[in-house]
Amino acid sequence: MPCTIGCHTCRRRRVKCDEIHPVCERCTKAKINCEGYARDLKFVDEKGRAQKRVQVKRQAYLEAVHAEEAQLEAVRKTKSGSPPVGEAWKGATPSIGPTLDIGVFKDEVQISFMLKTLFAGWRLFMPWVMTGYRNAEECTTTQTVKALSCVFFGRMHNNRNIFDSGMVAYCNALRLLGSDLKDPKAAYGISAVTNVLSLVIFEMMASKGGPGIMQHLGGVQRLIQARGPERHQNRPDLDVFENARLGMIHQFMEKRKRCFLEEQQWMTIPWFKHPEAKTFVSSITDRKCYLPGLLDDMEAMRTGVRASQADVSLLCEKIYTQLYELFCWRAAWEAEFPNCCWTVPVHEPDKPYSTAIYFSSLERAVEICHYDTIFLMLYRMGCILFGPDFDTTTIALPIPMIRTNPVLLLPTDPKSVHELGVEILRHIPYFFKDNSQHGAYFQALFLLRSTFEVFVPGTIEWDYCQKTFNELADKSGFEVARKMMPHGLQGRMLQDEGMHAPIF
Image 1 (cartoon, one colour):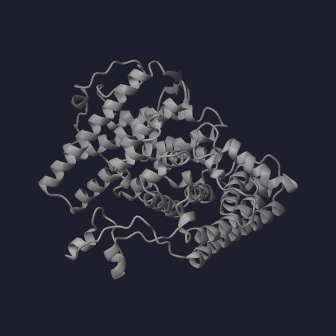
Image 2 (cartoon, rainbow, N blue to C red):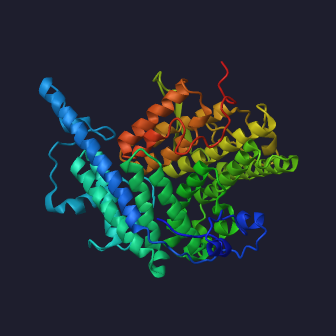
């Protein structure tokens, strides 16, 4: 979803803007007055190039399918008892039947299946995904919904034809979206955001690669940033914004670039009219908004871009501040939800734990998992800055905290990076306990991505993460899970290899 959002000066000079706020560094380094940024976006029509890219992707997919079919057919003719062609399609759950026929009602059946299954267990952006749906070929939402429902149905039922029809709808959706974004009224509408969000989920299922996901998440980011925080105060706009935040945060974390969401206005203004919507999930997501900027700072320090003593001291202060705020959230959560989790015995030798942690609800599990992953990232940064003996317990001591969930680590408990990572893995069985809860799989994807970096390749923890990613792809259709290890979508988030190997 291409668009231009640079400062006035760079756009007039026709040079690439680095988009640093409040004034860009390119202008500053050139000693030119930066005129700032416009609140309106000018969308560039790159429909032709976009369609060409999609056609290339679709053609490559079809050629791979046909080559696989030819190879399997040859094997089938030479070997008795070979599996049917359909069963050999990798990355999908077992087929419910080689000749599934849903006839003239296929669109309705596929969309109904998606709405009841893909979003089950955790509210992603449903039912706003259907905003603007008119069941018309020239309706953008119709094509994005069709693309998403087809690729999901095709994955889950091992149906290549339906999957391929999703690729066709994807091409149509991009064509229509390009037209929409040239109309300021349509570009600022909430359906534009949900349409691009649908394409993000589509890419997560359509392929193992990450470029399409990152590009569409960049489109979501630009649309939301251009709309401004005030436009997200009413519902369903607030709910869409809230559900889009996690994807945007992780996009910036993968890129190790500071995120506009850490600005105070983006953590307050959208909730002015609905303060009750600021839940524990919302407030822990606020804390996660700071991670991309800290990763940006850590990378700048590692590469020597900002490595003066003043820079390092400021970064250390930021880490301490974020840990303190995080522990305050954890103390409030512990008081609000006593006795909401328990342990379940695990007797499988390939698991890196003997007990799993279950929760009274998926909300509680998501909240504590976000907390753990933020804590883990901050802990790793602390070990780089202060050494492997970095201790977080002293930061938590001034915070009043009463233990009500004894199965969970408290900020005041002694722990290592490895032990904290294993606690996160102990939550995974809860997310996988119900095959119908695809929303739980979606949450587990972010959870695992933020955790596996702390384990050493070849260890039982590393192998467990790899196996779990593949299982997640098989059960949920999120094919991108197979791409995550060993380096995520764009490399390691934090370059701290070897600092947290388990000690035996």
